[in-house]
Image (cartoon, rainbow over all chains, first blue to last red):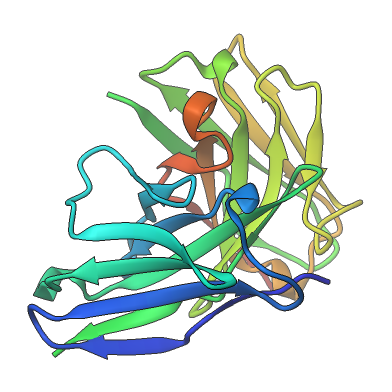
Length: 110
Length: 121
């Protein structure tokens, strides 16, 4: 069974830069997995940030960026703000109609 | 505006069934694939199922395969999830979400607020 891995938690200072990653239990993540990223605050529906590796969804500030770093997908926040404190999830399309979410990364801004 | 509104959640005993609905508005429902995603209390998001824009294909996570059925009625702009043989581990908030489609296929771009399903005796 394929597992999508994310760091459980991260902390960043206001104004700082943080990069989360999204990997596979076996193999490398490439653009062929169409990685996308979502932000979720408690009690709210997820918000789409990035799709197809590095394309920002409408209305998403340009301090959010996506990429492939090594063998993983990555989400970078440049100039973190207090309201970026949220859970962040990646999802990969594995093909054959199957998607898998990572376990999520909890970001603290302090 | 573009909106998805889920309904049908509640408390159900193990082994029983429940049907969730997701009412879509503000976009051409029949042009988009649709997903169900769930989130157990205090846990992360879990992809559950997808149905193609025309209903021609449905795919499921291994955890629900054979028990859950996703369907859609484009005349009613509504997505469904029929859940049978429910288990305690199915307890979660269930969100419907739109597949972005076109140049942003394979991403989920519009999400509903979710409906809570509690499986308990």
